[in-house]
Image 1 (cartoon, helix red, strand yellow):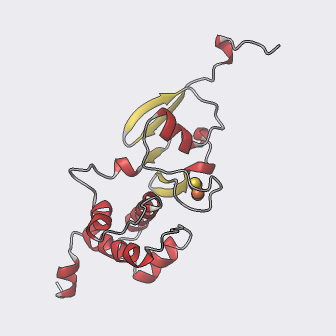
Image 2 (spheres, helix red, strand yellow):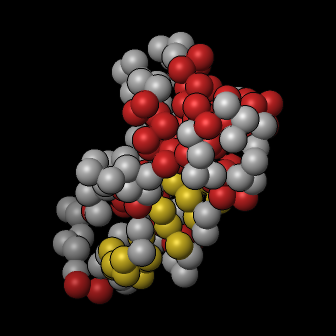
Length: 175
Ligand code: FES
């Protein structure tokens, strides 16, 4: 016979700050942040791919730095700023990196794009003038099985331009 859960067996609430909003969740401290974001907070931007920290589909920003939420215990996010894809913009007003990926139609199935966008966002925040080679290096561990790497790189480069408040056309014109 299994013991019945009691009120005292409920995990203590954890206080998070996600996309600028304070929230609390009553989950075990070792629960993967990805599952809390998706299942408890209904933020489905981050995706479950490998669950092993290897594909990048689950990428979020922790204090502005890209992190793989599938292998990060939710307790490790307490006291830090968590940003998901939803925190970068809205469908009506996408952020510059999101806009670049839309402009370049960089998705086939689209499953990897959360990780691509969040990784580019993190890179541009710390290095607004990242070169193509630096973009490639940063994205090399984000996996895309459809093979839209050409469009993804175009989007990453355009994201850099938009992030700096310039368009590719202006850049080509030498502005
Ligand atoms: Fe997290 Fe693959 S789902 S890295």
